[in-house]
Image 1 (cartoon, rainbow, N blue to C red):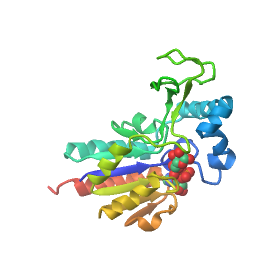
Image 2 (image 1 turned 180 degrees about the horizontal axis):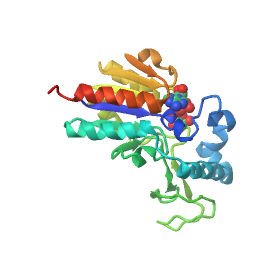
Image 3 (image 1 turned 60 degrees about the vertical axis):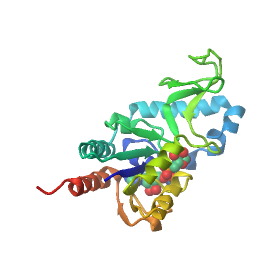
Length: 238
Ligand code: APR
């Protein structure tokens, strides 16, 4: 059984990393059009860097929670059974990897990486970024930006994601509001291909009607319970 899992900010909420659209979400406190668009970066790079530097420092102090750990375990268990977990995340944090996941596709980029707008080189970057920093690859000053996908930009790895969606037996969405495309469209794509769909979230998402089954509650518990169940399903009876 191949399983496609899409995660969003809700899977990292209990690690202390804010979501975007909940009552205290980032976009209820900050204007995304002033902080998360290429235009905003061109207009006011200092302000954009300050915002992402704060998030990067928070991330470096955060730890994976039981939901991340359970998904890493599922990856390993499916691997033992010649099955595959394809884990796509909208999150720019590295908590899946820190929990032990070996293969994580970051469709919205990674906060602990910087990209050069002059030579396109991408490299890991855990310190604060600023307008005076030089690209370690081409030496251009002021050309580094967070390696994240901003509003109006095309997500990463879409061809790989499409291929995985065509080769999956179960589509699962965890901790996402289902309000941002193209990720929010994956469930319909799966359903149109006759693939079973499952949602795990604190509350029904915008696409709740498209899911065949759903588990509502904090991810740290709901994902761990679901993984237990799935491992039982894929484990042949003795
Ligand atoms: N456990 C499970 N789900 C949770 C938890 C939790 N502890 N806390 C919150 N949630 C759910 C909320 O109910 C909500 O449906 O997680 C979802 C978070 O939704 P958003 O804040 O909209 O985040 P996300 O769906 O990941 O946003 C998508 O939008 O801002 C852009 O690029 C950014 O990747 C992001 C994209």
